[in-house]
Length: 475
Ligand SMILES: [Zn+2]
Image (cartoon, rainbow, N blue to C red; front, top):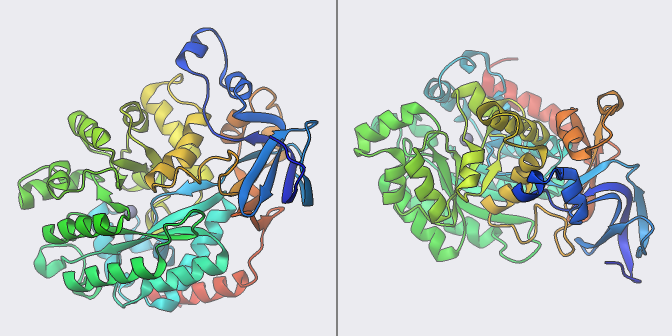
């Protein structure tokens, strides 16, 4: 595991989580704990080091074992070090309408119809600012890769502005070219200012794939195609988007089974349940992951799991706005990849993946009982599960040698960790809050000792305040 070569960065003295998995059922039956199993298998190293070279994990080992020489050494001070968390559902532009008073106590549909007119003033400047703020916020919560479902397009080239922002931050990103075709006039929810015709959507999708989708290893930007939801797009754009994704070998994303209102809408408009409609449109494929997925039936869950469709649980958003959440434990038990998303800032009002991971732990135990789900399973959702959602499991979501060097050294308040002596990973997720203390993306330092290394951040936040005030109609 070690080497004589010189690496760029060596992190020492960490509680190193290479990959997140606990004890097997057989091990648990013999009394082996999660932490014992993980350490015995080398998935976790108490007193570990990790070497970074050329943006990748070069090697890992235990203190005392030979380490490569390094240009720079970072002492983790015994802190927990995990793979960077991966966010698989967000609407970054919505941080311009956080906690917007007229919308905060409505249903999903009421919330959307209140905010769509506000979002119609989006332009490339406000999209740049909101994306920059979102990436900075995500980095602070230990997230190193995010997708973003950008489906409101009152003006052209807004995703280009997003790519500009993520490039300035140095964040790994999967842009989701969202779309809406069905305005109020056509029986949908959004006003006509924020929808587009099908030819425009498909042409821009191809343009964005050509300009920004990097299929190569170590890519910093990729593109997925993402009609918003069945109640805001036509059946033909669902079908043609799936065909375009197949043609260009990119991923597919949409909202599915988020709210019981959706069941009634699908039965009335399409004469089918949402999942049946989704399958009939050609979407039940391994290139698809869906957001929320709360209300699938047991039989529908099994069908989508068998088809290779992944799901993103959005814990806070679902509890704030729809009242239930995806049954992650059961879906994982069926073989489905389940990741974690913070969802749009206007519904969840926070973009903190540590908090969403902890909430995923609570939801699973609340539903299934105290022996049903562990911190390592929740962390597995936020790392390997989310990476699988994005079709990126080979490179992100773990820290095995060869992985992208996307990693987080965590800091919790010293009082909250007092008494955590036997299981650092359970302690990390149960006894927080935890914040990122050091973050590397592709081996490059983006946050150091709790401080974001973003020169423009203060200026961007000031400009974001002005853009949000304009959108919300306040001074
Ligand atoms: Zn969403």
